[in-house]
Length: 152
Image (cartoon, rainbow, N blue to C red; front, side, top):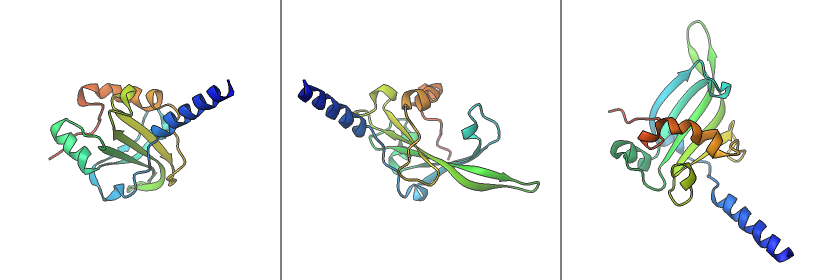
């Protein structure tokens, strides 16, 4: 019985570890798709400045509407400092990552989701990507769950 429990625990840990997403080092040198300033949102954590980046595979997917394994989008979400004259970037609130892998993420439209808190490359915010991320991305199911578009 102990062996069975240990085996099940090990398999569960392997399954969870197998679905983790690494911090996307170097994403700021990827293609910058757009910047948005969000002044109001139902989820307060999304208020701020968003920069969206795509790696080469994700960029190809935006153009062809067919994503390949390893396509990655990054949402660099920053606080905003507002004055009478300007809106300026503040501290990083989180770095959101969306990666395409049909083998690992079948339950969430073939996309995996993660969010790294502040400037951390290890401190994760997402506990349940299906309820915390994918539910919102269902709004754009007809666009392969991707909010961004390719702008010429």
